[in-house]
Image 1 (cartoon, one colour):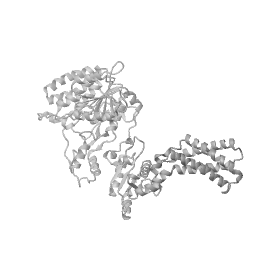
Image 2: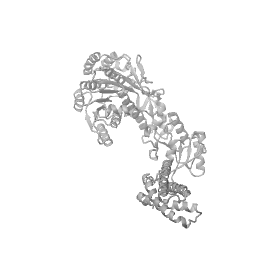
Image 3: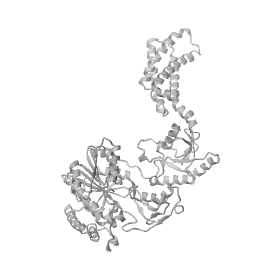
Image 4: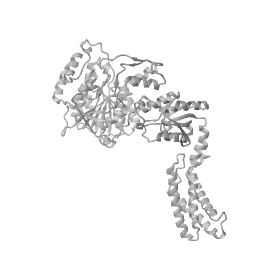
Length: 636
């Protein structure tokens, strides 16, 4: 019945409003004259009914009171109802004084306004009242019983969503909150039962009443890593499965909904603060421009493509040699932004002619260079390929950009380029030197900068997917050393800061992103095991395997002699160090190409050391290199 009425809600609203207007004025007369309207007042009463019906329907129509009858009615709607009744009553008084004159009882105006407002407000809320107390109560009586951990704005919004959507099959039986002032208070009919550390006791009480709590939802989107760890520990002590709502960075819609409830991830436990961007500046640097992303099919490159696309470039070129992965990101971008011209360009950055061709024919104006070999142990055994891709490939892209007067060039670097102890880090440091050696300043066509950051969580081949696979297979989870620490960022966070840094460069700078505090890899492993519902070293073993060639216990952020300068963004710094002359770098590269042709790993390492004296190569290069095998794409 209700569904049918809502289908024709405007006609239904008109009929209801007409009824309310007539009943309100009738009640006002009956109240004014003690339930018996004198015969002398009947002519004025009849004229008043006609006037009230006409002018108030017009007022309500202008105030759009025929809309908004839904389960989402709130205080703002009641405010609108009040103003509409003030408007309607004012018009009614003015029209009645003009037609009937002073003979119309003045107290009726006041009584009529009060009755009409109260009945209109009650009617406006009827759909919500029905859904929450009649339909909702019947449907949620047997729903899954949950506790909401956090009685703040997010928790209350989640409760409202659950109460307004009985089809979700959820029933909130209480709140947990560490704010003592909220204990025993009632929020929308639900009690704040106590602090999070009492979760086990509270769940035990429900169990004794034969109303077991089936799930705890942590609704603290602004929680830090330690706070999330504490909340998770409290939930685990209760022996109840727990989930969470998105972090602040994920809540783009500005509203917490039950559909956003998800499993707790290791990202939540790291507690990365949301990134605040000056999107106006970023949009100005991208909108209407032709943008090329190398390594577009990799973890970082694909995220750059997704984020660049939302700033409406004139054309987006996806450049990679990994055919299947490139096909996937091409389809994804086209689906997300169907009006954006996207060009998937298969090619290898080691092929200068192909790189130059794409840049020239596409009229490319900005380049994000993310293509690189990145795996440390693999590159220790593939020195020639690491050099060809990370060094010579970068030189190709930079030179092609300069030759075609590309306005902006940004290279993705790594914290492993700082005092490198491995081939991968050393080649990235050389790539930084190549980029910073390019001419800068007035009259130079291309602004070339590098952005240096640490590990990104969840990227292809990174530690998180590795640990996840090991946990799924029952262990052991392998960690190289109990004291190994790494800086971590999420992929979206890193790319957001890369886009911001791209707007700051004047040329030759190395930007370094604030990566927070370093994380112990063994702690990361333990947290992932706990999140999977297992106990570390009880259900799943953590096994230490020892440092691999080229690995360091701690990554560093700055090379000795580099000066740290602040920018207007608190998470982005500029490191200004030794800058080589372009001619010096070109002479060095000419010799490098000769050594690459000879495929002499040890000679290549020595040559890199000449340019990067802080590089401390592995002792393995004093021995003959093992048999090589072909490796994978340059997508990351």
